[in-house]
Length: 263
Ligand code: BTN
Image 1: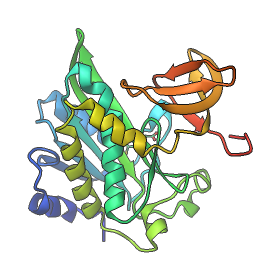
Image 2: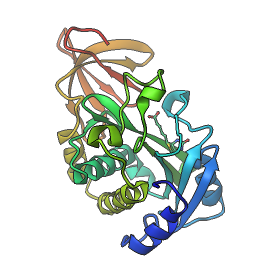
Image 3: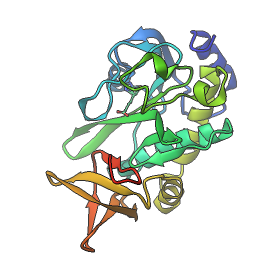
Image 4: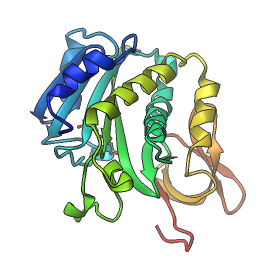
């Protein structure tokens, strides 16, 4: 069954990447792969080193939220060392890698700014990116990706209405190892082009479901509502307010409001 330690042997056999996922640590159960990856990064692990857990007991989400991470999902954290001036591209790069991975499985997904991946408006992947900085230098980034692969969201009332899984979409269980293989392959293919930001931002924004929608977002401590017009070259979300001016959202969460105006 998917998610067994065989995942490591499978990936070592099949991965053709130069560095992404080439060093791999598999843990049946851990608190958070982010913490394990951070320890490895502190010990000087190579770029592309990945940690996979069969199950996380304290999976972390963005904005201090919890990430449900039972067996059957893909929970992985990857160590990257981009330059400080290109680190802003990591949300685009990582969500695009997931988007492409789902596309290869025949699933039409959409990216919700900045880096959620949705299927039919429901979340199927979350990404948490953490950084270590010293004296104005980026030491490393940890890109944490959680994909609901084989997962019955109906068993979790708190997310049943807002989340979905690949198995629910396809009506069959998938191999977590195959999903990871495709993910690391796509991640490397996009990441090695980090020196071409326009290409990355263009593909990212073309596949973003947020654009053209009415959204609410936090802007310097207050809540604004407007229409998401696009993303700029820095990857910020450009929101046009009803009185005509625009605001650029740099970070945080946006809520896509439904067609009737509710959240
Ligand atoms: C979010 O949408 O809030 C982000 C969720 C990120 C979850 C992944 S699972 C692998 C890695 N380990 C964690 O504890 N979190 C990330």
